[in-house]
Length: 66
Image 1: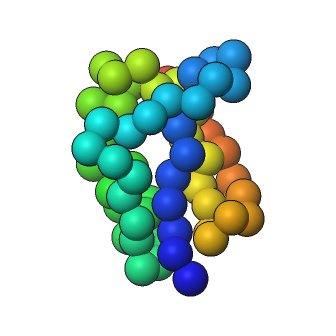
Image 2 (image 1 turned 45 degrees about the horizontal axis):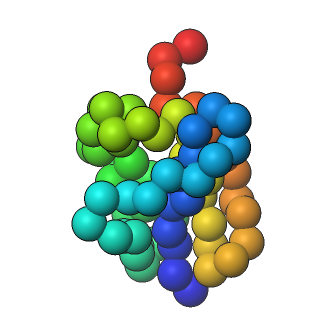
């Protein structure tokens, strides 16, 4: 299994991750990474992150504070 993030703008348009897509061995690793990098992702124009296990969508979340 490979865990990855897909990034989107608010309108659902995809946003490419600078430096290419990161792959993680587990869900916890992916979630830790997003917690450490979400501010930079926001600065790069990302509004929403979608966690994927292989090609299956696990959940999505806004990167903006509530």
